[in-house]
Length: 333
Ligand SMILES: NC(=O)c1ccc[n+]([C@@H]2O[C@H](COP(=O)([O-])OP(=O)(O)OC[C@H]3O[C@@H](n4cnc5c(N)ncnc54)[C@H](OP(=O)(O)O)[C@@H]3O)[C@@H](O)[C@H]2O)c1
Image (cartoon, rainbow, N blue to C red; front, side):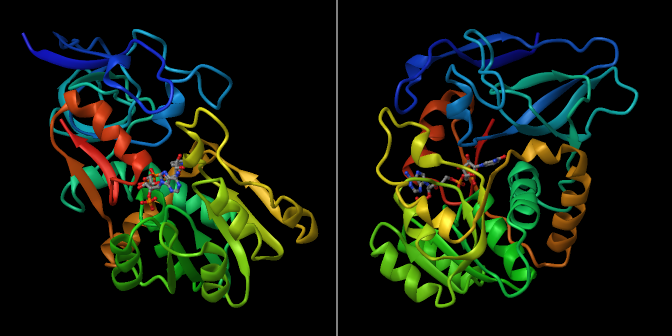
């Protein structure tokens, strides 16, 4: 019998995630039915949104139900198949959950190619975070050549791809990140035009220096005080692509900030929230672009791979909310 180690949500955390919210146990691995296949998951994608999926209340998807395997993207290999289009050994990406084996009927599954890029990057820069960066910057942010683009959480899975696409499109790219090491990476390795360490610099003064011609596009990943500071530098008819609000995900009271909403009026800003799945019909377009840039050596993909298997899930997830990750955070199963 094949054993499947699973992480089930059994409580709704308040504040940061704790181990008590999960039941981690061995179960019999499920067998695929007709038209289904089983995936042996190699890497689990850890995404900031997971904290929201654990919470009750209105959101863009239903919360994970208590007792269910925690929702997660993953990448792995087909292990047993009763599906006409998938054979054992095929590399696949999908919403497979925090566990070792998952059953799929192929719906929502995307193929990966480990010969082109490391398997884990198919849940990173070539996967959902990459699609988010692509549509968020180009469609929602309407970035065009010559624009100044500011990105918060810039060294992360989404932000690092936004900045690189911005450079490919001829924008002036400014990244905000939480350490000198992350800032050096953005500037020296990814070619960002300017960087700001929000933990050690005066944000308002640094933005003024980094964006002498103001800001045309703000790619918002964080919220709170960083948003206020960037809003103070927006140009007339600027765009704010609201991708994430990570400063709020574990908050038990509203974080400081978001007072500068007058900037939306006086600058006639277009502020638009989006979820990557709004662009579900166009995923192939994003993948073609991202894979093309990667093949041409124009896109750097940085993964932060953590060991410990599914048992390490609660502690590793929290790295996202403390800035402990550097690159796309994944858990090796
Ligand atoms: N709309 C969508 O469809 C969609 C899809 C994917 C992701 N997202 C959002 O995109 C954002 C980035 O996600 P990701 O997967 O790329 O994660 P990530 O950037 O790889 O990791 C999260 C980073 O956020 C920063 N951070 C955490 N708490 C912060 C705080 N209170 N203030 C400022 N920065 C903070 C940390 O970097 P520092 O060290 O720089 O602080 C941390 O490393 C998240 O808000 C996420 O929810 C949205």
